[in-house]
Length: 334
Image 1 (tube, rainbow, N blue to C red):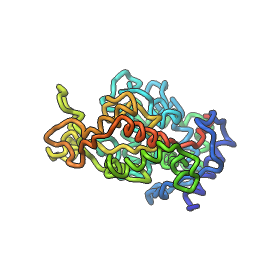
Image 2 (image 1 turned 135 degrees about the horizontal axis):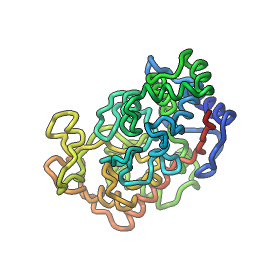
Image 3 (image 1 turned 90 degrees about the horizontal axis):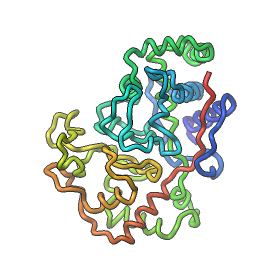
């Protein structure tokens, strides 16, 4: 086990001692295990168990939002694959988002954040989401509110040697998010030798995924994403098409391209795609297996795989076997 894994395991233990737990989404297979690569943290914000424990509390605290009514969890629930189950979500101030809430699973493994990749650091993404998604016009005022809570004031001193500030709140949250790596799924256990952990359909679905259906070209194991941006035709015919990556790169060839989402725990995180346009996992699989809608910028990697209904079902069975089974841990707030 890496040093980071040890730190994160210790942080989970600290959270359990200091708080309470919600029931697991599914029975845990034993000790906290993951097949993800080690998560690197930046030199200016190295991960420690104390930072993770503090960040977890902040993540679940509605006092971080402008109106004080919505926590970060309000868009990212563990039992929904760290998403919110909505096509498009509403911010605390009533403003509707224009893109589907992405999962936080393995968010620390990414190089670019948001569907269009506009954030180049996780801390930058957290800071932007805190201001916009949480409807916070003045993060300093919220930091002062957190500083007025004795428990937080003491914990920030212990962790940072300083009172709560916008910068330290962001760094604490980023440390917690880096701990959200996906645990073992039935498919992981199958690949580790437990041949009874998945169905025959899931095994056949994996063969399709890696071969005929060509899914693994962009959804590369073990993260099941390439971290790149592709146009799959979803903006075709829209009155106001979303430029996606093109708005950031300023390259017209990137218009309509969005980041490849991870497929870890994808069965929990519907609706699907950047616009939440597919209600069911089967719908999303059918769309992608068909090659998507034709458009000038559609990725040349997309092809109609001409799958049968039975093969679609097998692919779905495989994707369901990627569901992580670690328990949810919800800390007690000061």
